[in-house]
Length: 206
Image 1 (cartoon, rainbow, N blue to C red):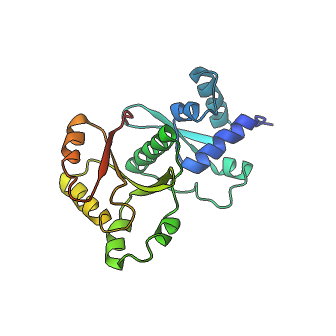
Image 2 (cartoon, helix red, strand yellow; image 1 turned 30 degrees about the vertical axis):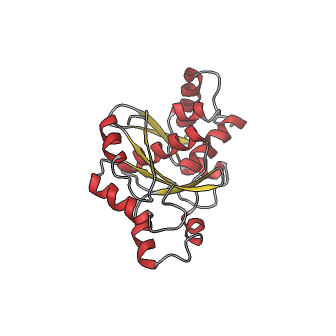
Image 3 (cartoon, rainbow, N blue to C red; image 1 turned 135 degrees about the vertical axis):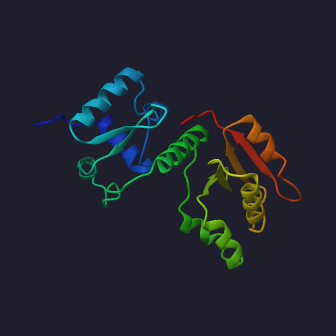
């Protein structure tokens, strides 16, 4: 007959439906599993054995999870978004986005919602911004843009900052997430004029 799904199982699968991939640490941080890492791992193993989730390892050995079609049916997902291939870089980027959102307590905005705020901007300026993988969020009623350092060059960062400086409401709310002190000091120096950036160093390693 298989496993009987608990309320916590459903919460875990809905969390995965929202973020696509997750780690044990993220499930603990989100408060879905509060007792211990050992119990979290054991329950995920049960869900995996019964075909609700799959697990994979990154190159550094870190285990991450994703949903199966069976789980999608169990929680009534509206479409089969979980039937897709994923590259290692996609997984890492999504895990970092999840870490950042959990750390500061935000939700990312759909791009169509963000686009509505820039209707008066020039098409050429919008095109430079929206062809990237940057994400937007609101914090204390203020729109922010998050740029993640995926081994990006300083030239690229400079171009991104310049592009956002031309859009109303973002020139003072550019957040750049890097993964080393060296990169942080280099990127901080790129700010100038009426453009203000916040450079944060992440503690998450994948």
